[in-house]
Image 1 (cartoon, helix red, strand yellow):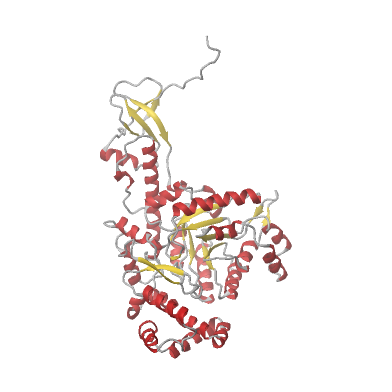
Image 2 (image 1 turned 120 degrees about the vertical axis):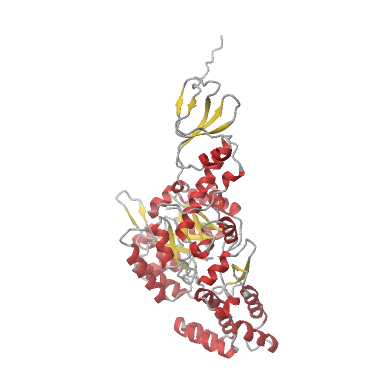
Length: 543
C-alpha cells in the first residue's frame, strides 16, 4: 500500500441555463460575448464537446445529463473602467484610465479638456506655442469651469531649450493658479522649470509617507529620457532652486527621495514630436527600466507606465492594456473632433487620412537641432517646403548667402514676402515675446535665418488652426498613423462624419471596444471558437 496520499479532487461542476440560452456559434455567440458587464460561464456541451458561453445560469454539483453542460471556467464582469491600473484612476480621480494628450497651440482646447473631464478622463490643455497671456486666460477659464465639480485636468509644459525663461515662467504660472497636473513633453534633458514644479509643495502625512501636491506625467519616447524622470532630481539643480528661494529645505529633502514623475507615458509612433518607435518594443523596455530603478532607489511610491502613439482603434487600446499599460493616451484622433482647436477644414483633411498619409518634417521649436515632427502629408505641401528650408539652413551661413534662384523660390513659395520683409515681421514678433532673440539675431546672421524659417513653420500651424484658405497648401497638421486606422474603423458609422466626432464619444467607444476585444481574447483562451468578427467592435452612441 502506498504511503503517499492523493490530494482531494474537487467535484466537477455542471452548468444549467437560466432565461438566456447558452451560445456556441453564430450571432448568438457574438451577442453573448459582447455582454462584457455580465458574469459568464465557459461551458462544454456534453453531447458533442462544443465550447460556448452561458449567462444567467446556475451551477450544480450534479453530473450533467447527455444534454447538459460541463463548467470549464467562469469570467467575472469586465468594465472598461477596470482595464488599466485602478491606482492611476484613484490618484487622478478618474472614471477611466484614459488620457487625451496635449496638442500645441491650443489644439487641445479648453472645450476638449472640459469634455474629457466631464466623461471621467484626464486631458491636458495644449499650451505650447501660445503666449503666456493666452495660457493664463485658458487656465483661469478651466478653473472656473471644472474646479467646483472636482474634475481632474492639466496643462502641457513643453521643453523649450531656446526659451528657458518662458518655460520657467509657465511653471510659476501653473503653481500660482493651482494647476495640479502637468504633461511634460519633448524633454531631452531636465530643466529647472519641470523640477521646480514637481518638487514644490512636497510634504508628508502623519505616517511619514511623502505626498505630492503637483503631479508630472512625463511623455517620453526614449529609455534615456525615461530614466531622467524615473530618478530623483539632480541635487545640483535642487540646490540652485533653493538658493533662488523657490524650494524649501523640506521640499529639497523629500524631492531627493522620489522620482520626478509618478506616471510615465511611453510615446511610440505618434503625431507631432516622435521617434516613431513601436509600442510593442518600447513599453516593455521602459517597464523593465522602471523596475530596475525602483529596486535601486528603494521607492515605496508607485510609478505607473502608460501607452501612447498608434492608439486609434479598440484593438490597439486593448493591446496596450494587455502589455501592462496603466493607462492609454490618445492624440491624433482627438484633433479631428469638434472640440479641437483645429479649423473645420483641417479636421476634414484628417478625416480623409489613411495610415500612410503621414511624413516627417522639421519642428518649429527645435529647428536648429534637426528635430522632426510627424505631420499629415495628404493635401498639404508643408513637409516638402519645410524640409527645403532646413536644407538651406544647413547649407548657408546667412540669408544673404542663399543663391538668388533659391532665394526667389523661398520668397515666392514659403514666405510670400522678401527676406527683408519676413525678417521685419519676425523681428516684431520676437521683440514682444523674447527681445534677447532679436539681439542675438542681429549679431548672428545664422540665428536670424533660423528665426525667419521658424516663422514659416510656426505660422503653418496657425494657418491650419485659423483655416486660412489661401495657405491651405501649407497647413501643418500633426498626425500619426493612428488617424488612418481610426478613419478605417469608423467608416460607415456615426463617427465617420467629422461634424459627428466628439472626444467623449471617441473615448467611450475606444474604451468600450477595448473591453469587448479583451473579453473576446479571454474567451478564446478558454477554448471558445471566437470568430474574427468577435474582435470587431463597431462604433455606436454611448453614454
